[in-house]
Length: 133
Ligand SMILES: [Zn+2]
Image (cartoon, rainbow, N blue to C red; front, side, top):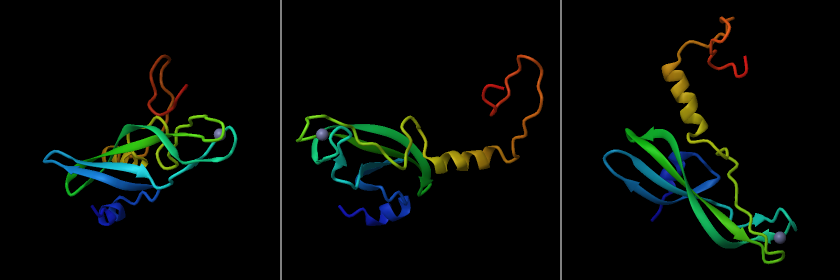
């Protein structure tokens, strides 16, 4: 299937869409990195043999009035030279995040319209947004 249109809307050039599932509650897009090989962190050779893959679920901005769920299929390669099996990493989506940066920004603008100003609080009071204060 041709996903050029949806890839244009998605604007995540690192990824290509490999599958989509539209249901009444949400739009699920399955993504894979465009690169077909990675550089082995041990011997610096190019690894192109895919050993394994695991999906990561990331929420993104709504599209066509439906919440969007991105399934990132990150692959594990095997180096033909040293047999190391490195996982690929995304440059666009951080390692432990559950939301895209643009969804996070959107929600902040939508629900926190006033800029947060830290002010001195009483001892033992949690101050949102100022870690370790
Ligand atoms: Zn290697």
